[in-house]
Length: 300
Image (cartoon, rainbow, N blue to C red; front, side):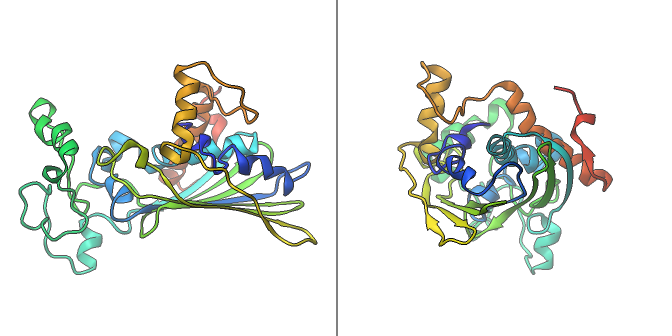
């Protein structure tokens, strides 16, 4: 869960270092908008076992837990109250029919309807996907190439969450899983100004390409807007490896002797629990229509 925190664009690193430029004693508000590319990464959650919320818990406890871990780390705080709304607005058969789609399929392999569908995942055209999934179906029956406009999708693809943290920061979070762009935008509004962090990532299919391509950075910016002064760009360091250079650093912390880290990014199981509790609380809020106090879910 902590892998996004290790990226050198500053998720806990450079941007975290400059966070003090826009806040003083107390924090004000933060906004995080995440986008998953419609053709590959975002759609992939709706082809896999994640599409059934009984199995995955939805994107708020899978994809978003990375973002919530990052926010906990950046703020140096924990979620207190969570309110959320979400719905399935793009994927699923009903939404597709409203847009005029008339051909559907359960899975892409062997389907004529899938041949011209840009959302279809063709396992037999990728040697790694073929050997890992298609050739192994007789072992467990797992189907990796399900149609994203099927009848049985029960997770949301459009989500909004408001979180109040113990240090009084209020975060507005948005996740959209069907955009033509992959990445996230983070904004901190503080007592001394504003910081904007923009990250554009290379879209990918899990296990479909080189591991180094997963979360590979395409563009990254950090801009500081101080009160009564000109805005300025922060130079972003380049890293090698997956997730913007974060993977090698994280793996070193886990499997090798950790190097000194001025950002203290290494996480414990408790940090992991706190990151997923935001998503768990958000799911409960969506079910009940009420804000949820995180301390009522579990005591850590």
